[in-house]
Image (cartoon, rainbow, N blue to C red):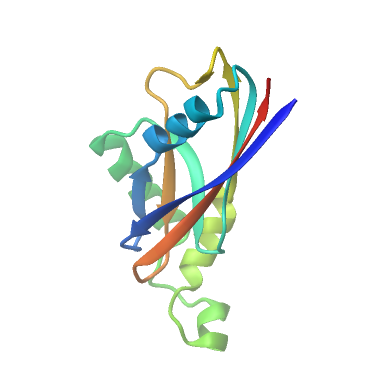
Length: 139
């Protein structure tokens, strides 16, 4: 069994910035030379998340709107009252989607569906530099 750990960095704009990171992640799988196993992704920070989606403008906009309905930015959050930083909504959004993903690898490729891409979502109220830890395990 081989385990490889690396880090990807992305500049984000915040405000529910959704970035397709599939190409960078798949490149890491190819460089690892692991043919069969799994890949785990983890984003550090409490105001960002990882998921998969068909990365096309209609679905991306639908996801943004759904997230706004679930955890609207224009309501009172206890976090904002305590810290005054105005990003309580971003913490709630990130907690709902989660910081990690696990994807199987077969034949040196991620087993994603035809229209399925890996996306980073930055919910914070300001631009950030986000770090995604990639851990690939297998043979």
